[in-house]
Image 1: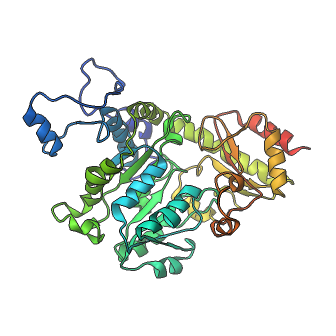
Image 2 (image 1 turned 90 degrees about the horizontal axis):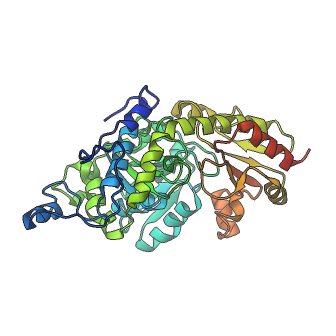
Image 3 (image 1 turned 90 degrees about the vertical axis):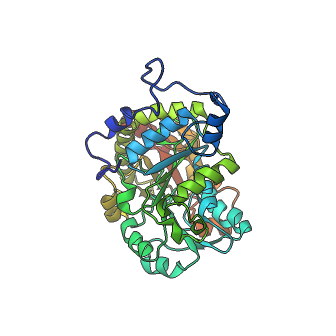
Length: 416
């Protein structure tokens, strides 16, 4: 199902009314959790046909599971993606995607301003398999174009960089990529589908950590890989070998039939059930969180002890124009702010009473972290400088608490 506008009427309805793959025997309105590992068949011929992909059937939960399939159906309804695959985590989504398309001698063009583990995957892990990473300034279209060549397997970026709060102009970058037959892969975890339309922005593959908004309050860890069917993968040197498969379907074919099975990063059925429920309240939770985030960003901007605030809807953000172009409503429930020193950040965090000191994003509870000493704490100072990590920056993930109570907590922690 293609949707013209992710904020169109019926977003929540599409998710809630998504149909099961098969009618439940007892008429349950929420799909039961299929915790089992294996699935029985009536005959030897039937199980052989299933394993040989002659019929669609669940055989083994590492490969597919009805509970996981239900979550994938809901994500497909929400996003308009052609295919969806749920995996064990957001990092599993990223690593499985690039193991599907990358090969020795290829390169990935991306920004150095990435989440710590994503940076590490590209810079260190994939490098040992002969994959080159080319870091560019994603604000500079000429620099992006110059970095692309016949061995570029993809351009990758985060929708809003974490924790830098930068937004690439995806529609303009997409024009460059399409002219060179290079796919755009976007990690859109920061802003969900009710506020961002990945297909419209030019993304061919969308990656999401479903641990965040989807899980419904940090109930579980998971990830999702969405293929919009907009790229001809016969242009990819690795996938060009799958000549018997239609070009637009080769990515999902390779991912499902080989990579995901061999790497085994499958989503647990219990996780899938929790996240299916989380999908049903995604929009209402997101809108509350994001509205509070914008209000807190404005509130912090007015405090003399705050050096700067990062939120792309603020007039002070250099990304406001492109943010307004890409997003409907408020652009996410994450913001950043800087205090004078690292010591001030620690002192502030230690005085908080409502806001929790924890990693993760988009829990029902508001969370704060000092990225430089935690997420990026094991990187060298040189690497931190490459990644643009400031030691006086705090990241705030805004939850569902009353925003006035959050303001009071921030004020008392800053001190009068």
